[in-house]
Amino acid sequence: MSIELKSPREIQALRSAGKMAAETLMLVGQRLRAGMTTDEIDKLVHEDTVRRGARPAPLHYKGFPKSVCTSVNHVVCHGIPGSYALRDGDIVNVDVTTVAEGMHGDTSATFYVGSPSADAKRVTEAARRALEVGMSVVKDGARIGDIGAAIQEYIDGLGQGLGIVRDYCGHGTGRKFHEEPSVAHYRQGREEKNARIRMKAGMVFTVEPMINLGTHEVDVLADRWTVVTLDKKLSAQFEHTLLVTRTGYEILTMRDGVLRGSEGVPGVNA
Ligand code: MF3
Ligand code: CO
Ligand code: CO
Image 1 (tube, protein in one colour):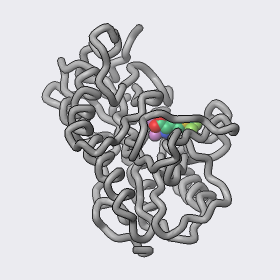
Image 2: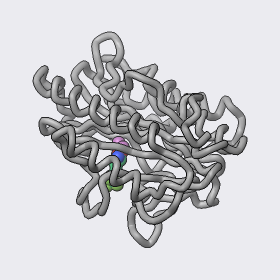
Image 3: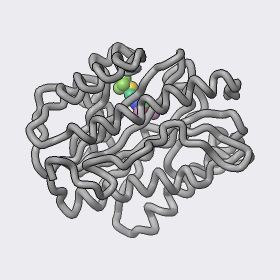
């Protein structure tokens, strides 16, 4: 097993890819509204990515048919854009991955369509905070397992019975979409070798906790992509791509503004 340390040149390319993904995600936030179909989000992401001279990583990745993942309400991740029209009260995670200069930038956010229910807000804000908590322990010398331990401590501490998805994890990224290491968002046992791996400056990986209102258990639909909660309760997720540094981390998918329709900023639909 080997986790690549990125060269300064590769890091520059990762910065451009990450910035593009972040900007495309912000554009989605500006355009999102009730009545919009998830296919329209796909078209927006595809066109914006291509306009930047980049490529949407999801398209044809292991047979995935679209350029972005759109995961509505009880869909945990890998939702396939289609004819579904977003409705007032829905939450939707939009997961953008851009390939630029041969490198990947992977980022997602959950948006509120119109006015969220109390449950929708609870699970979305917990997921937003879970990402921050997970990122906060990232630093040269820390262990990969520290991320999941911190997130689990936070989610359990809420005492709301929220579930942390275990079947899907964060991941290294670079020239390939998914590289080592695997980054679990829950506390792993001492025997988990992966959790004991030390972070090193120059590693690049994502943190992308999926938080469920109920059980952590999931199911995959017959389309072999769409991941749903087993109890059909809501799920939310936020994702950033991080570069480990000597003193902490750099968010390669940092936004230079707030997300409309999320982060407490009403969208045009709200
Ligand atoms: N962007 C997802 C992630 O965070 C992966 C999507 S794979 C796809 O890892 F094929 F569904 F696009
Ligand atoms: Co990812
Ligand atoms: Co992603």
